[in-house]
Amino acid sequence: MAKMGLFINYDYCTGCQSCAVACQQEHDFPAGKCGITVTEYVYPAEKKPVAVDFLPFPNELCDLCIRRHQMGEDPACVKHCQAACMMFGPLEQLVKEMEKTPRSALFSPR
Image (cartoon, rainbow, N blue to C red):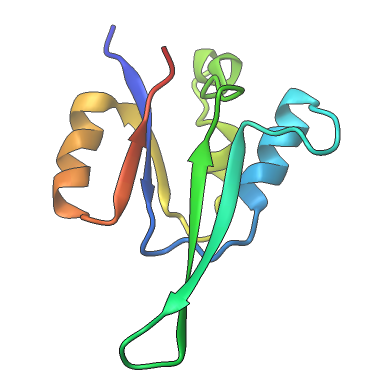
């Protein structure tokens, strides 16, 4: 079986936090606990006063919704991502996607 992973394209994340909310609800985590954290970065930009990036990043609580995957469904974060900037699939496929997308990240739990 192919090793699965999560691809995140940072160019399109809007910081809506729907991935974090979906994760928290899927796993019934208590308030303040979640398998993905969205961090906001504000920094000086060339053509405008500031730029803002939102970077979702899975943490040690993320199991890529293994239960959902066993039922043929995407992880909760991918399903509910309003910007459609997340993909779930075999790492080999996601690496090819990452080669085309410089501002991106791959995550695969142990």
